Length: 295
Image 1 (cartoon, rainbow, N blue to C red):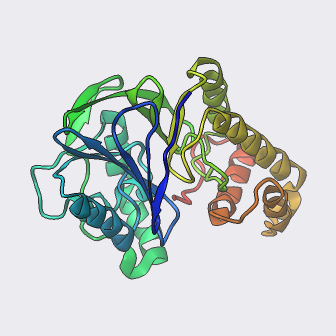
Image 2: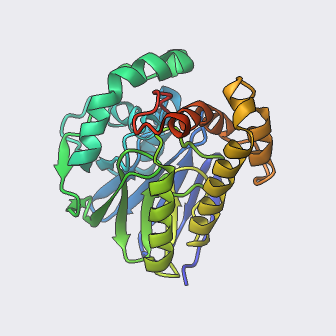
């Protein structure tokens, strides 16, 4: 089983899992999204790049405090809360690789103009204008060396986003992006919730029982997060079906109240709210291209 040693400094949490390498979790203050700093023998690997300028600077400051070089940034999937701040983290250093699969990179580049129009005004001066796209691409089952650490990636297709991936440091130290959340509400507006459920079912069967999931939102935890995410998606679909008329008229409250009953806080409930209209539109038109309410 994985063992954890926690030490909290502000919003940073340092702990160990089955790997012998130190992993720091940094949770954003503007938005509760995670970046992970993995300390390798030759430098620090970062998994996911935050959404905003100030949250990305939390990561940059933590790297500086560690007195270790930044060796690379991995992007798990193409939502802006995971890639938009990467340029702020690497700053002016052109030699630091920003790493993603080819498919994740394609979606980032395809959708960034829309995200700039939608998310930019929401974030105001916190929205990074120096967004840097991945510059080191790997295949759907690639392996990369960062800071003396070897990471492998498995591209698992559409789920929470148009392209989800799982990055592995070893058999039980996993970085699955937003395939599962931990005690936070979820984003479903990309319209792949059925595929997401199928993916979660496969992962429940296939992941090692002692795996630790370093998820994009909430604290790392075991594979129980997979079942919890499946229940959340099923509850959302049921609540939306039961309250479709109210939602179609613009009243999201019944769906949101049903989702509130599942979790102890309203963290990221706005993402669920953003998901109601696109998923309802998809159900009513049977379209595979719902309106863009991009995260």
